[in-house]
Length: 205
Ligand SMILES: O=C(CO)COP(=O)(O)O
Ligand SMILES: [Zn+2]
Image 1 (cartoon, helix red, strand yellow):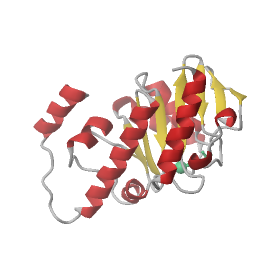
Image 2: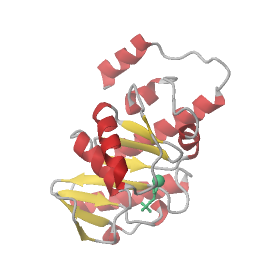
Image 3: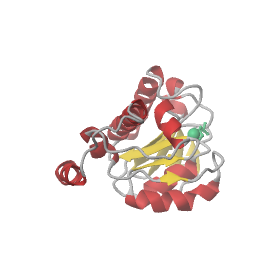
Image 4: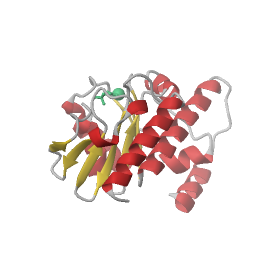
């Protein structure tokens, strides 16, 4: 995929997330790894109304070299993209259910296979930081070395994937799993066993 195609996909998938309520207002941000740098959503932009020509362009050294000013969460995206060579894109949302769990204990249990397949075994809860606070980068980098997704306490989820489509799919699965976890809270649901989780990760991981 060339850069123009990546820009167009970013606009289309941002709009899709926004139209289905995974982000509201100007919440959330997305990054895509290119061969020679990164695309990021501009700060204060709505995922529903991105303009392909104005998406922020960063070079391989993370310097802003084109488009509008990038998201204030550059550090968050940089932490994931440097910790995980397998990450081609990173999606950060304030999606309702995952954010609700980020205000509770932060635990999304292994209820369904697709959640485990897309988000992995563990979703670390990162302590609260002010949005855009560069101080969060080491904590996120350390967590991203062992996990594909994290929850930012009292803020929302961050998840990566090999491609932008994969990262968006994973963000949707994470939100769905958080919704199920809240729906089933207090009802003692049957969880996938550690053996079933291992089997999924060995087969699809
Ligand atoms: O989600 C957000 C902050 O955490 C949105 O910030 P930006 O508009 O700077 O991307
Ligand atoms: Zn945010």
